[in-house]
Image (cartoon, rainbow, N blue to C red; front, side):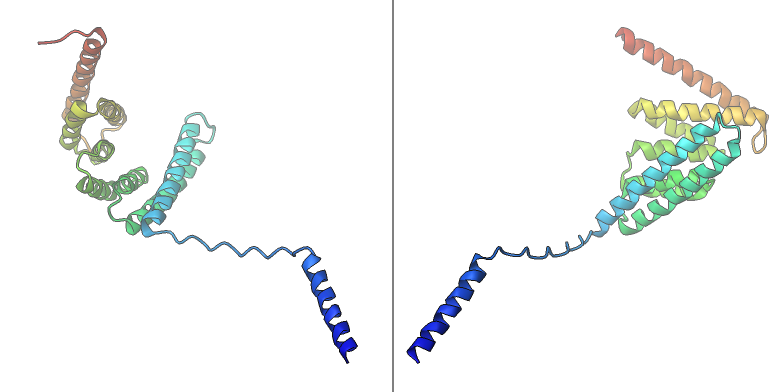
Length: 221
């Protein structure tokens, strides 16, 4: 009996030794737990996707300038702007305090021809951040689309004092407005067109004077 007990004990330790000596099999790696994004983080993702669609749209617009089938490229650009609009709508839904997303929403609305929607989006951006120069400049371009010249001119004066680069971009938009209505007077009177053209000329001269003063370091009293 004692011999059987000893034999069993030796067998047990032999099996245990074999198990301890055997290499460990790798444990299966648990699947990573998907990260749960906060609404603000989700909003950031939609905002960035919207910016990517805007970039694609501008690329198509650039191609349209030299493309044989100009309208085809412009149609592609519009699709991208519509996709951008959807992304920015979602971004603003998830984060109602996201002033950059409201500004980009306004941009996408304006590019798809919805000037009224653009103004509402820009107004929201500026309610959240009143000195947001990008929204002020883009809202002024929406004003131009609605022929609200005085409102656009006020925006230019504000930008000229605080963000000259944005003011320069807006002045280019004014020049574009003049060129379009020189080709087609629909919606404006000849006197209004002449007035805006004269105003643009004055501002271009003033800008050049200011630039020259900055370059030479002279002061004007």
